[in-house]
Image 1 (cartoon, rainbow, N blue to C red):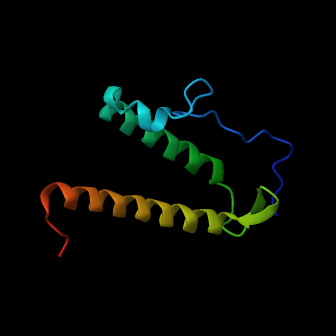
Image 2: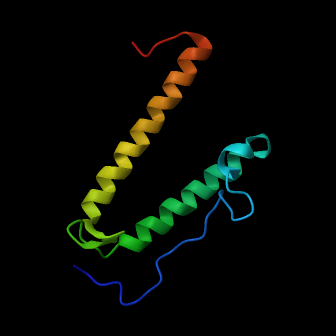
Image 3: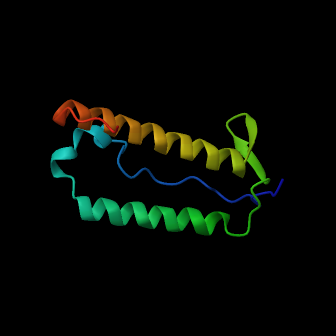
Length: 100
């Protein structure tokens, strides 16, 4: 395990703010695609930098258990795929086309 040397690794919320807990779903009318894609790219770069010198076998605390960086990668791939699947369902409901 590689210790985080007492660093605060918490990050600020981007969309679910203290005074707007459901901002991630309530504020879609004022969404800006280009700005959101730029934010996504910046978040990816920050994540890449945070793990640049880490091994996929390094572990850290997640709640009350230890997980590896490898577990995080697999979890994120699963989540990304799941949400892409949700988008497919929505698209199919709109245009009745399937991915076959």
